[in-house]
Every structure is written in C-alpha cells, then in structure tokens.
Amino acid sequence: MSQAHHGTTAGLLGYPDDARLLLVNADDFGMYNAINEAVIRAFAEGIVQSTSLMIPCPGAAEAMRLLKENPDLPFGVHLSVVRDIAHYRWGPLAPRERVPSLLAEDGDLFHLDRMAELLARATVEELEAEFRAQVETVLAAGLRPSHLDWHCLGAQDWVNGGRADVVELTLGLAREYGLALRIDAQPFINRLQRRGLPTADHDVLDSFTLDVEGKSTRYAALLRALPAGLTEWAVHPGLGSADAQAIDPDGWRVRQTDLEFLTSPRAREIVQEEGIVLISYEPLQAVWQSRSS
Image (cartoon, rainbow, N blue to C red; front, side, top):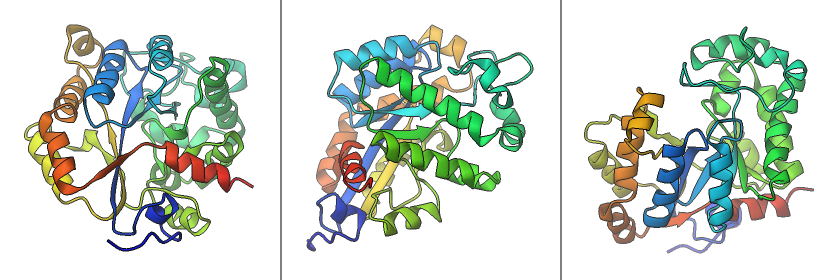
C-alpha cells in the first residue's frame, strides 16, 4: 500500500492514499421510536458507525436517553427544518416568533413538497437561530456530537436552491462548535479539502435512492466496488413494526430493508474480505478541531 499523504482525506486521517474508507451513518435517529431501536441494533450488531439526531422530533427524548446509555455511539446533529412525512408533525426548537420564514401556515415546519418555497423565503438569520437552538439543546442535555448534517437537504440542494449562504453558515457553525460537517457536493468538497479539512471524497449515498427490491444485492455490489478514499453512506435503518408502518407508510420498507442488510453477516463478511476500513465522524472531527483557527 502507498504511504499516507497528508494532502488527501485518507492521509489526513492517518491512512494510506489507497485505503478504502467507509463511513456508514444512520440518519433520522429521534424521528420516531422504531427508528431509534433499529439504529441501536445497526450499531451494536451491524456496520453502522455513527448516527444523526433529529432533535425537534417526537422521538428525540428517547433517542437522547439511548445515546446516554450507549456513549460509544458517535452522533451528529441532523439539522432539521423540513418534514418529510405529511401527517407526522413537528415544529422548530427556536421560538416560532423568531423563525417565521421557516414556518408554514399551521406554524409547523414546511413539508418536503414545499422545499422550493422554503429555500426561497427562509432567511439566513432565522436558519441560524434554529440551527443554534438544535445544537444547543443537544449540548444542554450533556451530549457531545461529532458532526453536523442536514435532514432532506445536502450542500448540493442548498446550492441548487440558490442558498450557498446556508452552506457557509453551517460551515461556520461546525467550526465554532468544534464539529465536522457532512459535505456531499462540489465545489465545497474541493474547497474544504484544499483547506485541509477532511470530507467524503465521493458522492454521499442516500439509501432512499436505492430500490427496495434487490437492495441486499445492490449493497453487496457497492461494497465490492468501493473506491479508494472516503465514501459515506447515509442509511436509514428502521423496524417494520405496526407503529412504523402507521407513522411512515412510504418509508418503512426502505428502513426495514436497510436494517436487514446492515445487520447481516454478509455485510461484515464483505467488509472484511475487501479490506474496507469502517470509520465514524470522530476522526474527521479531530482534524476539523485541530484546524479550526
């Protein structure tokens, strides 16, 4: 193997340039309890290495309790200003009168089908107020996150919506709080890597983009073909319980099939056979903190 080179993401993390690094992060922890249970299982029994907490959601209190019971589970704050289940309602953590540009007529956050409206009207000042409220709530609970990422949005979504300012805002918050930031799009990947900040080298995989049918075979193929450098999978494990089906009729099968593969012996066997190194956001956070000045 080649020697570690500190100009690459692998090198920044102390690995050779040709190392195949995989960060499997379970998104949506805290959305509802059937997800919470599945995330803990996927970490304890599977290949999930970290998770992202949706602090405004109804399942967040249970998720925070589980994080305290499982202090070895690294987690980030899943900055959440979009709802993706129409009948499953939740609002901001900041006082509603401070964030009116983020709210629909009913006083809750906008649903995913009104994303364009949110991107057009949200002010950066009110987004900052809500993002800070979510991070500060986690810190006030005595929990210490490793990173920030967005729910139902990524850097490319913000940029394509004309909101590169929000990416810069979130980058500033990550550095202020000593956290890493999930970046899944150019030109921000190159920009941050040029500044010596590690990010995924390749497009982040969102498991909701995979077909439910044949998903296990597809995941296995992706592991076999994993490129050198850092790859991130944003996965969504969940139980297929009656409660999950009632809350999440369009998403529960995605989540259940994710859980089935992530906890399967096959997943660990392929990782071992291919020499893939599983990592969390914690080593990225350490480098971000060392370069935060």
